[in-house]
Length: 221
Ligand SMILES: Cc1ncc(COP(=O)(O)OP(=O)(O)O)c(N)n1
Ligand SMILES: Cc1nc(C(=O)O)sc1CCOP(=O)(O)O
Ligand SMILES: [Mg+2]
Image 1 (cartoon, rainbow, N blue to C red):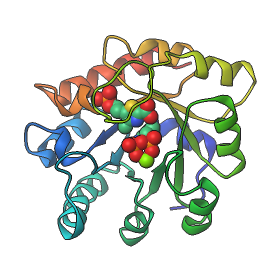
Image 2 (cartoon, rainbow, N blue to C red):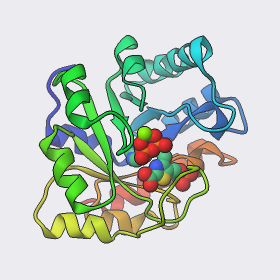
Image 3 (tube, rainbow, N blue to C red):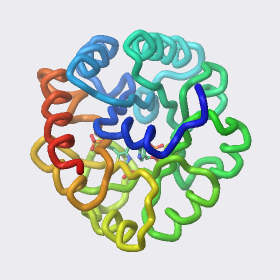
């Protein structure tokens, strides 16, 4: 992959689907295929929490999902695990404030992979940018039960603060986002929504992916 431009990242963020084996009630490979058909624009492999796969099982599962993404031209991002991202030659890595520093991770992955960083205040956003983030995740926008250690919901306040400071980093909102409540994230300056359960637990994952794609794109300028 060539050096990623800001415009290119923005174009990947509208419907950012995140999933691990414990987020699904049906076969995860089918859920991902349906989500892709529905119109997700980016995928993150996030294998963590209760009952998550480890070791070789985790690697094999990641390879299966990466393969599905490859066939369908959807970039594949790995959550937390920099070694796995490098071993799989993933398209990028997403890290949070409790993970390795963005500066260290950027050094390890070079300039041609996507680096996403979770942020919860303006200082963290500025630091992430200085250390080489390509986009920031801001959340939780709404309350969520999917992430065991999620912080208190903050709405779109930080997205608005970042934009009112004329900071142009691509932003994806995350946490409790559904088809019905996605639009404020974009109206207030986000470039996309990152969701787990709204797609992974949907009766029809493809339909929810399609609805999210439609609502987000209708509010993007
Ligand atoms: C797009 C996106 N935004 C935020 C997160 C959360 O990352 P983090 O705070 O490191 O928490 P975990 O996901 O690792 O539990 C994310 N994964 N993706
Ligand atoms: C992985 C994650 N990170 C969050 C953050 O606030 O940084 S909230 C979250 C869980 C998102 O799952 P759902 O779409 O089911 O609410
Ligand atoms: Mg993390």
